[in-house]
Image (cartoon, rainbow, N blue to C red; front, side, top):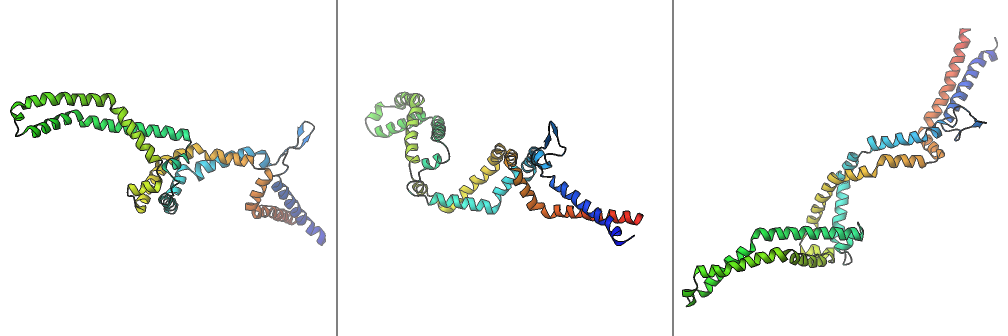
Length: 299
């Protein structure tokens, strides 16, 4: 047996192994479209990635949305010291440095529509009016006025001739109806009166520059930052998770992958796995060479 015959088996085995694995790797992405001969579709066409693109997109979406980037992960990210401090400091500084053009109304309408702002304003008006009315009712203003009226009358007539004619019973008979009238007026007109005042004050407040508002209520920048920090933390802990679930990360990832061209997916995979796939091809050549060599030895 000459040298060519000895080398032929391992070399041919290596070539077959290399070509076989090379074709197998290429079949991951090629052909892009099914190959048809009449009504018959050639087996293994299209390639694995083009054929399973939808399933791949769904699997990646579920992996990212359910495991890699959960709402808890996003919440922890936003509550990390670096991100939280950066956002809180930026918001606090921005609020404190706003110029005359930035009113409370402008800020709110920058986040919600004019109609939504109006609804929120009316809800705030209702809540404030209800709280004030409830407080006034608990104060029992009529009784207070009647009591203070009796005391004032006594002080006025004390030491005068009227004191001989105006006794406690007479004073009470005069003051009691006044108190009752006051209570009746509050019940009938209090809500409208309070609402009118609250509406006027809210109109002044919403059109006031934020900087002026901060100065009036004497909030220093460090206190404002602390307040923003608390509001931010509560919002992230209680609200962000719900927004993320509505955002549907899994669905977004699935759609993005489905929208990608197969060639883009190929470039993406090769950018990560090119060396490994080349190693698979070379391993095919090595295995083919070894099998050819073993076959030669067994002869």
